[in-house]
Image (tube, rainbow, N blue to C red):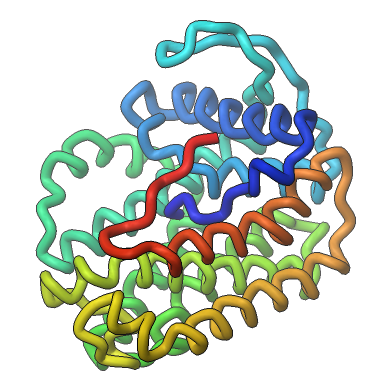
Length: 286
């Protein structure tokens, strides 16, 4: 994924901030165990959210240990490496793989990324064939939709459907329509946010962008001026759907950070992307 599913730090209790960062560091350490140091560069806040969400959904109380790392030697609480964090780490690598493949299809230089991450991605795909099949199906459908000049919802459907299947698979016996709907809508949210964030760059490089295909504005500034209210409505509708699905999902001790992310964090990132004047929105650091 891409780092758009993040908590809203100003509205986050300290205990929940510590839990979220512990999940982030836990997945990062699991990535090291799975695929070595370089693979840790692919970790993002989206997978930290997935870790927090599924530890609660699956009622797997994480073991918290004190550890440091190369980037931050100071010991801090992290979620200990477990079968669940390893699976999420492999999911992250598989998603990184389709991102690299998509960049290659767009004519972007990916040689260095493939050189650095290809072995780790292959290992993750071999260990998680179901997740790899979801990603492959998504990529194939995504290319077809882009080649056909799909409009907004059709363009977002492959990634949203993949995340629906991913959430259902990770949930196992705890799966429900609400869990799958949550995955589907978060996938749609991430796809749209990435398209909005990359709008000017996509237009400049003549890459497919669902918002450009739909509204044909020559720049993001022009898009906001002409369709700002429509953009806000589209994204708010997704967030309201996420909230409705989440009401039927039972959470545990990570409830604070998960609720903060879905209620406040998603809207905060939307505001950041839509309010920027030019370029890409600033990546946050928690």
